[in-house]
Image 1 (cartoon, rainbow, N blue to C red):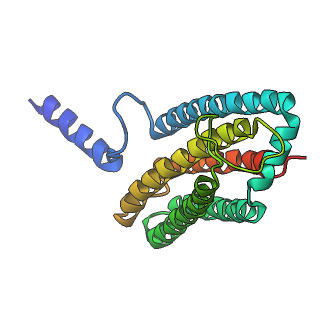
Image 2: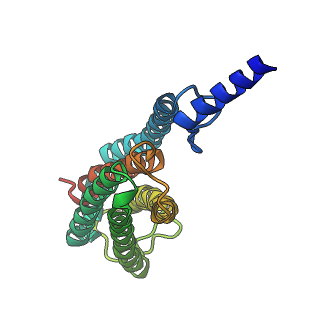
Length: 231
């Protein structure tokens, strides 16, 4: 009886010294192992995203090689100033995301700064989509639509420009969808940050979504010169 009592009290004392982290999943030995594992998972997911957009980049290059004059003429219908504005906006959102990750690792005391920078990131994302909406609206009214069936722009001096706009809408549309997903994820971690859920010991969701957001920004860095600055 006495031995059992001592063991129980000893175990209880050990738990008090090392309280269980509610974010620690039972199938991981330590929080460090858990964080490393989920980060590897995120990198693998991002690799599949690179492959997804990589296929579109390759297809674009092949069609540009086949219809060089059509692609060159078609890109003049894009507004370089709006494309540049969206580039600046996304670069700014990358900085605000970096600051959100940085302050989330400083503990609950910095939660207000985390929330502010996450909200700024969401704002930048919304501005990006707003600019893209105006671009799409202009293309719709001009008849610069994807596919030969819907393309109805008049005054073209070179045929097959619809091929360029097919890739334009596929690539920017898919990228825009990733922006929308990012806004949802950013909203989710903003709510959690406002509740003080992140600390120096646990800020993994902010870190992972930061990686995702940087990839979204990086893809646009390639899309902008590819679509808007064709030579």
